[in-house]
Length: 194
Image 1 (tube, rainbow, N blue to C red):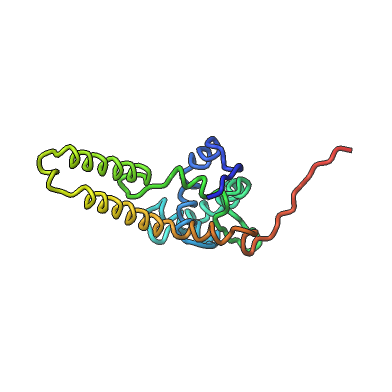
Image 2: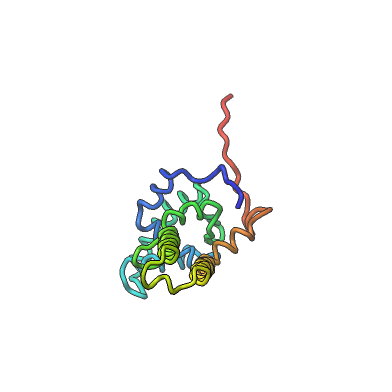
């Protein structure tokens, strides 16, 4: 992977994640795997907030208003999403990955991918050392066999992580070498002193 000098600073990521509605909106956009409309997003977020599959209209409107007036413009300004006001569609953008690195969880139990890989590595190392030092019960296992099993566990875990994050990976490779699909360039406002 290429080094990106324009990665979002941690302070901005924390500011994004400080608001629960923004976090929920980003989760729903990511799980959609593509473009989502503001109406769909507001219904999903309202449904999550009320724990009802069909949230009340007043709640959906409240979520819609806060998304359109506050959260979506902020996320778009930071480059986390692409928000097309004309079509009312939202897609993740280049800085979405910067935010997801702070929220990446394997399971609902709260284990991160890095913790899982560290546990696999440390567990494998301990077993291999126990085999090489001929601890009782471990000396019967061939070190090559255990090493092969450990590498297989790493490969399966990596494949699972790739599958779970497939939408963001495909999006990242699809955007290289050009601008985002269907994105209309925003005119930049420049203030000039005369």
